[in-house]
Length: 395
Image (cartoon, rainbow, N blue to C red; front, side, top):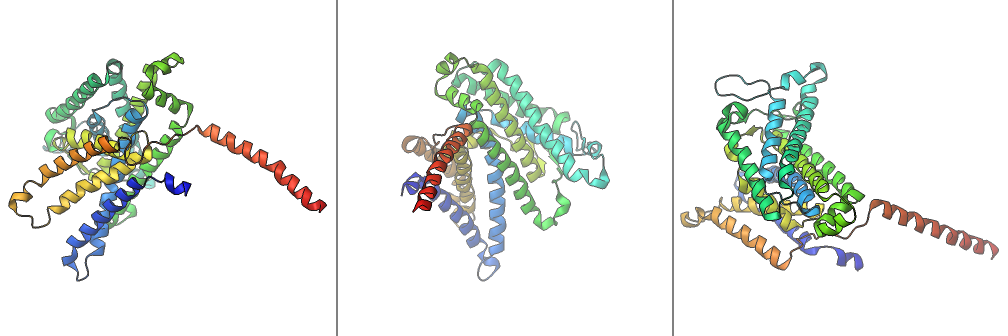
């Protein structure tokens, strides 16, 4: 009973309902293809849905590292999203050719140093992803130097300004990343392993592996002494500083680490989308939506960050699916506005009635303490077991 009482039923029910509706509505809308419905079509749609859940979870995990654990208010996620995506495209594509293509770099051919080992399938994408994380981290380091001493509201304004600056540079400086024409034909890693029709499963697998690796690494980091300092920062900066910790340095570390994760998320997005256009990046879907996902799921909890993505992206997809029904012109043209209104209302309701999110942060101790407690318990149980065996032998 105690185990059942600890289960966050609100989050579990929300995830189940959203998943059921996303799959069920897609199944119902493709029912005309076959007499009993198009199960394969609905399954393919759900795979695509899960792929973007994995990708967007990478961004919310990065944001959770900054805000959920250290209290660093970064409202410029879009900047690291774009930098990561475009850096990957520059590294994995060949040099620009033709009048309609103009971008720097194009190192894909040079990095394919061993065609016999098919390095274009795995080494070039790996370098592209690592470069995306490194460049995003460098940008975050440069931004953090003048901004991290600001208060939350001023820090939010500064990071929004950085994001808009990055977006305008990508649009106006056409020589950099081809401006509004964008970059197309970004190759998918390991693409020769599957057929064209099965690439969606490969995209899901790549996104899931990257997300899970980041999730595991963050779970271990947050339960380390470094992670406990970040939690102390979030709760009380003065007390953390009084204990001898360099508050600015730890804030900077969380900000840079979160940006690196966001850059990796941008890299995975580039592989999945295969094309990038500067105009398609906006502050609503590139920053605000990730904040909404983290707030709904539960900040300070990596599992909540992923759950928030599933629920909120599922809601977003459902509003798109509704447009497939005959709603009448008056209602159909208002669906996007209704979606944004309901999204805002959902955030307000969560803040008012469940401010900790669907999956609240759980109190945890360090991994070292847990191991020590288990070792002490095991050591204490051994003499008891030995005495019990001795008593049984006497009888």
